[in-house]
Every structure is written in structure tokens, then in C-alpha cells.
Image (cartoon, rainbow, N blue to C red; front, side):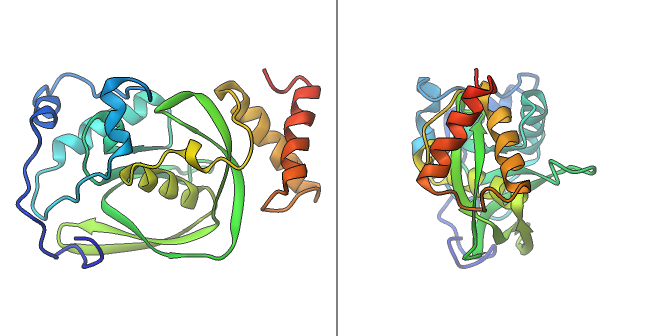
Length: 226
């Protein structure tokens, strides 16, 4: 598909043997191996585009189950051992009506110039969190059959899309850290401290190096970092 749209020609397409085995085990849940596990090596590969007409019902069902079990807000197929361009994104994850959408061959078609820093973690890197700079607003597109679907997203929704699409291109959030890594247990305290500082007008959307260092120091000094 590339940039040609959902109906564009794709080279002859088949499931790889390991992918077929994972999907054939209907009752077996999909596992999210951590980075460093041999089964996670494909996280550094560019995932394959999916040809129109490929049956993805079982993959979607099993990925939804894996995401629900994990308690996460997004999941990319390579994270469960299937190197194809499909993701799940929970929209309004911090709101009152979260819903998870299935996106095939997703792509970003427009990015805002505005950026924002926030704390991220990853189901594939369960021991690490950190500050990542992302575009604040996006227009994303994906395939529904042979039709393009487009959606404008902002804030945390846009962040999830960027994180998951990065997975399809072999990029991990740790490649984009703009500050020191922290433990996963520190994710919530750091995020809450960052939000508090924004509400008080102490920092803006993009932090300076000094503000990043001070955020870590302040959280640690108040016992908010483990």
C-alpha cells in the first residue's frame, strides 16, 4: 500500500509459518514477550503491509484479548509475534468513554508543528518508563477493507497512535527519550507531577533540559519515585 491508499497493489501475501501457528492455536492467548526475549527480536523490523482481503478476524480477536489482559491502552501486532501492520488504539483512554479501535495499515498523513512531552511506558519494555516528545495533533488514516478511514486526533490519543505506529517501523519509545529512563513504577508519579506543574504554569508543553532534570529531582525528593 505505502502511500498509495488501501486499494493499491501489494506483493503476493501470505502468513509466515510462526504467525500461522500463533493464530491456529485458537484457544491459546497471544503473549507479549519483553524486549531481550528472542521472540521480541522482530520489534526492530519493519512490519509487512497487509493486502486487501486478508482475513484478520482471529488476529483482531486475539489481540483485543491480549490488550485487555495487559491493562494497556494500545497494542501493535509485532508485540505479539505477528509482523504485520495492524494496531489497536484505545481512544479517550483517560476519559469517561474509552473505546478501542482496530486499524489496518495505519499511517500518519499530517502532523502538527506543536509538540508535547509526556511520560510513556510500553508493554514490551515492562521495567522502563520515560519522557517522550510527540506531535500534539495528527491526522491518521487506516484501511477498512479497500476504503481509507481518516481521523483527527490530539493529546493522549495522538500519542498512542504515534507509539503504536512506531512499533510497526521497528522503533521503540526508549529510542525517543528526552530525559533519563525511570522505572515503570515511576510512570504515574512522574506523570502526575508533570501535570501538576503544567496546571500551575511552571512548565509548558515542551520541557527544557533543566525542567526535565528538576522534574526528576522534585519527584524523588518527595518520595514520589520508587
